Length: 150
Image (tube, rainbow, N blue to C red):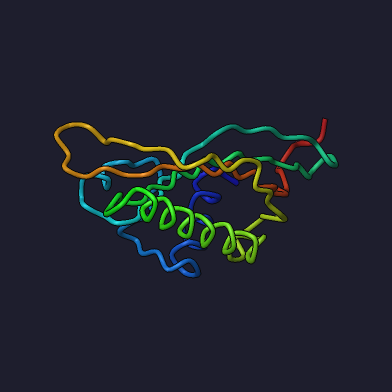
Protein backbone atom coordinates (compact mmCIF):
# COMPACT_ATOMS: atom_id res chain seq x y z
CA UNK A 1 0.00 0.00 0.00
CA UNK A 2 1.00 3.63 -0.05
CA UNK A 3 0.81 6.75 2.06
CA UNK A 4 -1.77 8.12 -0.40
CA UNK A 5 -4.08 5.28 0.68
CA UNK A 6 -3.63 6.23 4.34
CA UNK A 7 -4.08 9.97 3.65
CA UNK A 8 -7.25 9.23 1.70
CA UNK A 9 -8.54 7.16 4.62
CA UNK A 10 -7.94 10.00 7.08
CA UNK A 11 -9.58 12.52 4.74
CA UNK A 12 -12.55 10.23 4.09
CA UNK A 13 -13.02 9.64 7.83
CA UNK A 14 -13.06 13.37 8.62
CA UNK A 15 -15.27 14.37 5.69
CA UNK A 16 -17.75 11.55 6.32
CA UNK A 17 -17.96 11.57 10.12
CA UNK A 18 -16.48 14.78 11.60
CA UNK A 19 -18.60 17.39 9.83
CA UNK A 20 -15.81 18.46 7.48
CA UNK A 21 -16.10 18.86 3.72
CA UNK A 22 -13.74 18.36 0.80
CA UNK A 23 -13.20 22.13 0.92
CA UNK A 24 -11.41 22.06 4.27
CA UNK A 25 -9.43 18.79 4.49
CA UNK A 26 -6.40 18.53 2.20
CA UNK A 27 -3.34 16.37 1.73
CA UNK A 28 -0.08 18.34 1.84
CA UNK A 29 -1.85 21.57 0.94
CA UNK A 30 -1.99 24.69 3.10
CA UNK A 31 -3.34 27.08 0.46
CA UNK A 32 -6.86 26.82 1.89
CA UNK A 33 -5.79 28.94 4.85
CA UNK A 34 -6.06 31.97 2.60
CA UNK A 35 -9.55 31.00 1.43
CA UNK A 36 -11.26 32.07 4.65
CA UNK A 37 -12.24 28.59 5.84
CA UNK A 38 -13.32 28.66 9.48
CA UNK A 39 -11.80 25.18 10.00
CA UNK A 40 -9.01 23.57 8.02
CA UNK A 41 -7.04 20.31 8.27
CA UNK A 42 -3.86 19.55 6.31
CA UNK A 43 -2.44 16.03 6.43
CA UNK A 44 1.20 15.18 5.74
CA UNK A 45 3.68 12.34 6.14
CA UNK A 46 5.41 12.37 9.51
CA UNK A 47 7.41 9.16 9.10
CA UNK A 48 7.36 5.50 8.13
CA UNK A 49 8.66 2.17 9.40
CA UNK A 50 7.95 -1.46 8.59
CA UNK A 51 8.70 -4.95 9.78
CA UNK A 52 8.39 -8.39 8.22
CA UNK A 53 5.73 -10.56 9.82
CA UNK A 54 6.13 -13.51 7.48
CA UNK A 55 7.83 -14.04 4.14
CA UNK A 56 4.83 -12.50 2.34
CA UNK A 57 3.37 -10.21 4.98
CA UNK A 58 4.64 -6.81 6.19
CA UNK A 59 3.42 -4.48 8.93
CA UNK A 60 3.74 -0.83 7.94
CA UNK A 61 3.58 1.98 10.47
CA UNK A 62 2.64 5.31 8.90
CA UNK A 63 3.00 8.48 10.96
CA UNK A 64 0.50 11.09 9.83
CA UNK A 65 0.57 14.75 10.87
CA UNK A 66 -2.81 16.43 11.01
CA UNK A 67 -2.42 20.19 11.22
CA UNK A 68 -5.73 21.55 12.52
CA UNK A 69 -6.52 25.24 12.05
CA UNK A 70 -9.48 27.13 13.50
CA UNK A 71 -10.20 30.68 12.36
CA UNK A 72 -9.64 33.11 15.22
CA UNK A 73 -12.72 35.25 15.73
CA UNK A 74 -13.94 37.28 18.69
CA UNK A 75 -12.39 37.14 22.14
CA UNK A 76 -9.29 34.96 22.52
CA UNK A 77 -10.90 32.83 25.26
CA UNK A 78 -13.88 32.07 23.00
CA UNK A 79 -11.59 31.36 20.05
CA UNK A 80 -9.54 28.91 22.15
CA UNK A 81 -12.75 27.18 23.31
CA UNK A 82 -13.83 26.86 19.66
CA UNK A 83 -10.44 25.42 18.68
CA UNK A 84 -10.54 22.91 21.54
CA UNK A 85 -14.11 21.87 20.65
CA UNK A 86 -13.05 21.43 17.04
CA UNK A 87 -10.05 19.32 18.09
CA UNK A 88 -12.18 17.17 20.42
CA UNK A 89 -14.58 16.48 17.55
CA UNK A 90 -11.69 15.25 15.39
CA UNK A 91 -10.23 13.11 18.20
CA UNK A 92 -13.63 11.58 18.98
CA UNK A 93 -14.15 10.75 15.31
CA UNK A 94 -10.70 9.17 14.94
CA UNK A 95 -11.27 7.11 18.09
CA UNK A 96 -14.65 5.99 16.80
CA UNK A 97 -13.22 4.74 13.48
CA UNK A 98 -9.98 2.82 14.24
CA UNK A 99 -9.84 1.38 10.70
CA UNK A 100 -10.18 4.89 9.21
CA UNK A 101 -13.57 4.25 7.66
CA UNK A 102 -12.53 0.75 6.47
CA UNK A 103 -9.40 1.84 4.63
CA UNK A 104 -7.83 -1.17 2.93
CA UNK A 105 -5.13 -2.81 5.04
CA UNK A 106 -5.54 -0.58 8.11
CA UNK A 107 -5.66 -2.67 11.28
CA UNK A 108 -5.45 0.08 13.91
CA UNK A 109 -4.23 3.57 14.68
CA UNK A 110 -2.95 5.36 17.75
CA UNK A 111 -3.02 9.07 18.52
CA UNK A 112 0.55 9.76 19.59
CA UNK A 113 0.49 13.49 20.29
CA UNK A 114 -1.86 16.45 20.47
CA UNK A 115 -0.18 19.83 20.73
CA UNK A 116 -1.65 22.73 22.73
CA UNK A 117 -3.48 25.57 20.99
CA UNK A 118 -1.13 28.19 19.59
CA UNK A 119 -1.64 31.27 17.41
CA UNK A 120 -0.82 30.93 13.73
CA UNK A 121 -0.45 33.71 11.17
CA UNK A 122 -0.55 32.44 7.56
CA UNK A 123 1.36 35.54 6.43
CA UNK A 124 1.48 36.65 2.78
CA UNK A 125 -0.87 39.55 3.47
CA UNK A 126 -3.66 37.28 4.69
CA UNK A 127 -6.32 39.02 6.77
CA UNK A 128 -7.10 35.78 8.60
CA UNK A 129 -5.52 34.67 11.86
CA UNK A 130 -5.85 31.08 13.01
CA UNK A 131 -5.32 28.95 16.06
CA UNK A 132 -3.26 25.84 15.33
CA UNK A 133 -2.95 22.39 16.88
CA UNK A 134 -1.32 19.24 15.57
CA UNK A 135 -2.33 15.61 15.94
CA UNK A 136 0.25 12.87 15.47
CA UNK A 137 -1.45 9.71 14.24
CA UNK A 138 0.35 6.35 13.96
CA UNK A 139 -1.53 4.12 11.51
CA UNK A 140 -0.80 0.39 11.34
CA UNK A 141 -1.30 -1.38 8.03
CA UNK A 142 -0.76 -5.05 7.14
CA UNK A 143 0.25 -5.74 3.53
CA UNK A 144 0.77 -8.87 1.52
CA UNK A 145 3.93 -8.58 -0.56
CA UNK A 146 4.76 -10.12 -3.92
CA UNK A 147 8.26 -11.29 -3.10
CA UNK A 148 9.90 -13.92 -5.27
CA UNK A 149 11.21 -17.09 -3.70
CA UNK A 150 14.92 -16.88 -2.77
